[in-house]
Length: 135
Image (cartoon, rainbow, N blue to C red):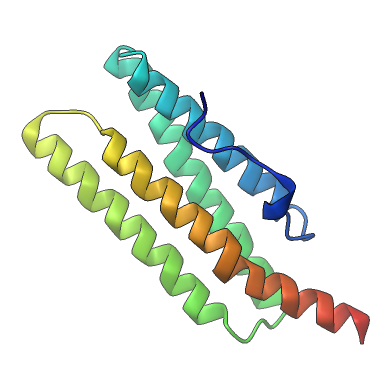
């Protein structure tokens, strides 16, 4: 059973970001599956790294796009991305110090953050771009 289910209510109508979001869901679910099945740390670490790296790629693409669109809330959006990355780094430091791997609580944080970010923060740029396209 997936941790997150992708559905059409998450679509913003802004490509390639809808595709990016769906891929992030897929990576989060793969990471979750590895925890649930007690996969070896090497497998888990590889997929979790892929999830983190893809999040950074997505954030950079979104930020460049917002700059190109002259999106007025760009800095607030960037601050959200930076806050997320700092929190993930903090989790990793804590787990490295205790010599354990990332737990379900980290994936729950990512899940909640991602849903909130898409439904609220990303939805704002979707409204902005669609309203400007209509003018």
